[in-house]
Length: 328
Image: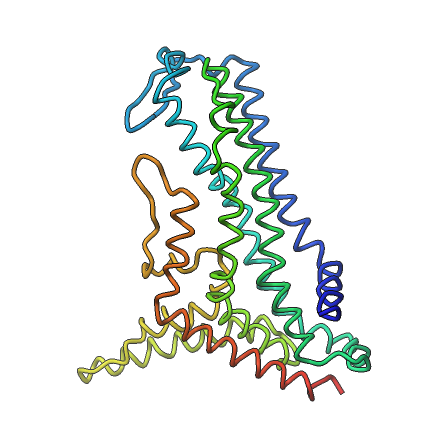
């Protein structure tokens, strides 16, 4: 356990730029942009123009009616929607995660062989299994946890800025929003989705680690090019067989196998193929508790476990390859 802890620290410090600074820069840009818009709107008195309306509980509220929302059910409803959905503001930050994790996994075992540092690590009493698993945990657990923390902080700051903008309309939502328990539980709900993310991301992480441990050069071309070439060949074969009245259902293979190998690191990938419905309500959006329940419900789908088993098999193969392959 102590060895794993130090290996995780090593991975964190060596890749701090991708895991911390990349999402942090994205968060800072978002906050600065929103702060600039709010500051300009208040300073130029733009929040009191005739063009501003607000949709609350399915109804449009004109700016002349905003002061009437200072008390009552509508104000509480607005606060509930804000507290339950504010994490959606951090969605752009989560786009950074799959990009960083993708290239990290792709280089995780290849770089050690390229710069021959693998000789140093093999001289230490650290097994190949422990080394590969530390890289897997870094990509699938540590990186998402850091991203969730940064995205939560950025979304909270943007929520406060939105509260300031609404206050300029004569509506103070700070008290009901800050007293809403979901405001503080939303980041916890996201952290509770990490096991689901790990399971769905295993096929992609396993494939990338396998290529990283095997390829002698051009790992990106091997990792992305092979699935794309296979997809083209399957479509061609499907077309040729269709001339004789049969098919291999290439679209199913591409959607359920090849896309899983390349897109599994995207957060919420279990919603992308339509197999799990995104719990969005017309008036209130998708609160984090509903997303958590739907995410864990996706584990009832057989393809989640089949893909995870394939990912584990590729990770085992990557470990075995690392035991004997180096740049000799």
